[in-house]
Image (tube, rainbow, N blue to C red; front, top):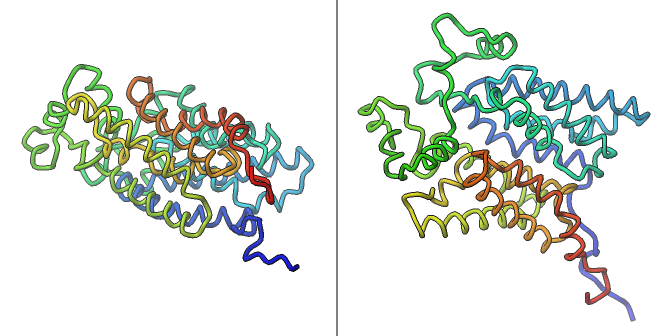
Amino acid sequence: MELQTTTSPHNNGPSSVSSVMLWVVMALIPGSAAYVWFFGWSLLVNICIAITIGLITEALILLWRRRPVKPFLSDGSAIVTALLLAMTIPPLAPWWITVIGIFFAIAVAKHLYGGIGYNPFNPAMIGYVMLLISFPREMTSWSGLLTLSDVSLNFKDSLIFIFTQQLPTDVTYDALTEATPLDTMKTHLGMGNTITEIRAQLGLDEETSQLLSVTPIFGAIGGKGWEWINGAFLFGGLILIYKKIISWHTPVAILLALGTISGMFYLFDAEHNASPLFHLFSGATFLGAFFIATDPVTAAATPRGRIVFGIGIGVLIYIIRTWGGYPDSVAFAVLIMNMVVPVIDHYFKPRVFGHRN
């Protein structure tokens, strides 16, 4: 009797690490373009610094470990780590912040554990958290939206400021920076203000903001500008799911968990808890859900495990944003769940082919 099967019991995903990384890079383009539109050319400067230092660090560590340089350098993993880290660093952070962060991510978080495939934690998020804890002032000084400010830096001025911290004579540092929507919301809620009062004080729309002489930090559903950036990352993430570069389990679980828990608190007290849409479309929510938490090395191995992994991340994002010390908590949530992955994989083991259980 001939055994017939329609497909092989193996994964039919992309054939190589380099092809996967190439798709990830291309899927990041819409979000990066939106980021540059709202925050200026400084992101491109940070990306160039991060990629350059990332590749140099990768090559030097490979030589030190006596490993072949070309195959590992060309797989694109160092470039993806550099891109993700650059997008989490404030646009106008000094150059040495990016250098230290990407060096730590590649040398310590990746190669200290044996290189790609062996690292238990997401390298980009390890680099980000190290920077945030070590250099809080530089890592919390975000520039304001270009579309809402009369002050902006062109590419040349951005380059000069990142490397020398010198601004044009007619521009002040305070005029370029402002608190993020998540930070602002968290601070004012902690002061006992209601959502209605916060939006009234800070301007819900441009007409109101002009009347009150304030910058409109909040948009219709999330942080102003961040709504579009997150939407662009959502578009790129859907491309990765469509091309089967990533599975839907982790990002959908993250978004549903975050939306559900924030929705419960919002329904209970809408004046002292931000809406689910605000949590979803502010900060690094969609970047984290589709591009960071889906790292196949540091995430759970099975579909059911990925759902549990994603639910944990979504719940932790809300808990840390609401009661923790950091407004945007995607990195911390991902790293905490990275630590839980061995337990998840233990209880949600892959089914052995040919067996019922």
